[in-house]
Length: 450
Image (cartoon, rainbow, N blue to C red; front, side, top):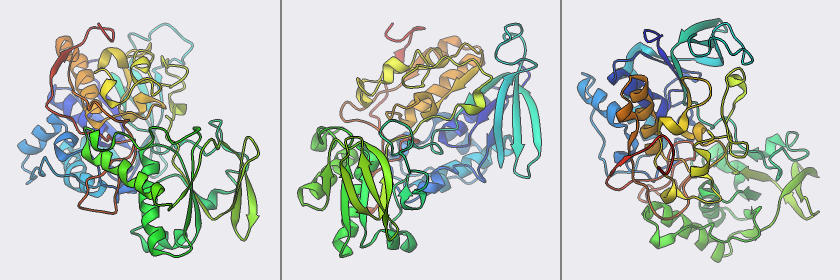
């Protein structure tokens, strides 16, 4: 099977980094992206400015490929903070171009199996290649065999619902016209018109929610009649605003401070302990949110639902995955990233050992590897795919070696301030939000903590 390609699902930052790492190791990657271009998901939040610097957002193997390709690529300033648009235009698309025809856009992976076997059959799982089922943009279907599959498809397309039980609230689907599951781009005049002068509910407590608070609070100052309610499932605000001035990532700390200032200035009403159970029609196109205790928020025009993301595992149904029952992350990784215990600075470095499954040579990487945990870092994803590429190439010593240092304060994940180009801001959960200081060399055993 060593002559077969390694299929990479998704042409985002982690998927393209995987391709660069595999190519550098002499393996043959094939990248399938269902969107129309590399970085298709990032294109949906082009307005967000990351609070990682360029230096943390370019994979080392990808940088070497770009520098050694006669493409005229000029490396951005490592100390600058790009927007999503910058990241796509100045890095991801040039990288996809440098990788050439191994990156195939408009191609969706609709299923993966062991060739000739469903998940019930034991025989041949170590000797037969993987069968990857594809659907092209024109609707035609295809199937190829692969020695390995690296799933870097992310979680962007599967946001969590508003309902407090992890399921959609009653009436949530019927109220789709007033719900938005992303931070709205208020620089867009048409989008801004939908929010100006309205009663807006923001649901969520991560950095995406803080971003929405800052952006919409600024709109409230400019648009009379705009009213904001901030719904929290937790009982109080607590540590939601993060480390502030003590945060090792200044941009992340600044985001929390600006959101806190908006609350202190009375620009929004905080509604703690509210778990949405039902969305009822309220007349005039408005809705009413009802909690599981019967509490109500009336006359709501728009709801910005920023309650996190989850992995789509449906097209991996014939693969034997070893997933934690709580986080839906690989069982060896889950204890290291449990958001009830860990923040950015306490997640241990990890690689191929923690990302392996009962199904040989199938790996979930990037944000998808974290399941429902919100603490993913872009540089973590780059280290994941470096380790996996080394293992697939037979360099097990390199596979067990991970270079990674993480910030010590704050909770990672979330979108950042995008209204002030002079203020570095955060990235969305699905792409990596934290800068890293100078790396240190760490050698991992086959199990975490060894």
